[in-house]
Length: 129
Image (cartoon, rainbow, N blue to C red; front, top):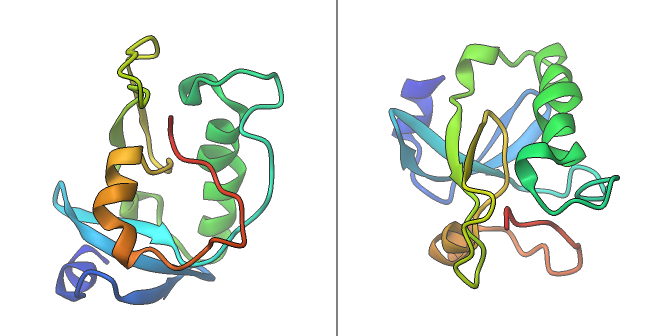
């Protein structure tokens, strides 16, 4: 799949494992992608924590959701783990960084790729920090 994504222009929508994705950029020998639609609605963390590394959302994305994508034909090796910087908007580095196969956009990435991200203004969604 990597070669196919490398040929796609940034901003193009493609279908994979039953989900429509938007290619945002080439990254680390693969591609940074964003869901083109709201996939599900849920809390960031059911235990009231604001640390993505230990959040229930992180566990769901990299557990049940990843497994569901694989049941729809995805291959786990198609997903490249990313180091996610958990620095908050105000510069606090309390949570450091974490690694995840499926994560959320940072505020910096949201700003960088905003023109390519579908208009989900009617939907609430989480950013990483």
